Length: 154
Image (cartoon, rainbow, N blue to C red):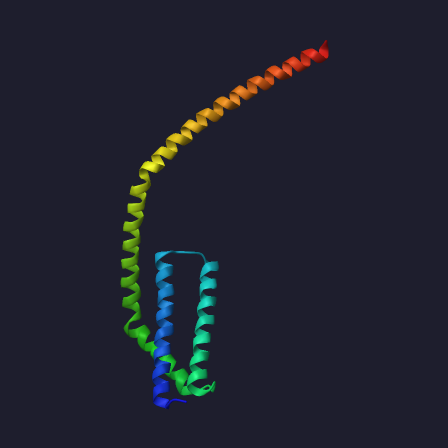
């Protein structure tokens, strides 16, 4: 068992860490928008992870006993992080990642532009070939159908 001061410090750091991890989720949601279902799944996984981390902290530091000063310490760490670091961190990181992903996306589109043009030309060529084959098969089937009708009438 550790001293109460050390335990309080660990609780403060746990609060900061939990809020930092949630900020990472917020950044991902800003840079890569996704629907409500995936946000719910992410939140569920986040809270399960945080619950496990808090449980392990309590288990190792105080033999599983819930100490209210540890809860207050974690909340204090969260509030300090939210007030001092979080807004600027989320904003700057989101903008930087969005800018980087934009450049990477433009590079990828530029790189694959010749393949896209070739694919469009091939699609047109395949379309012509399919139309020709369709016309040919229709004419052959019409010919065989007429021949079959003539044979049954005779």
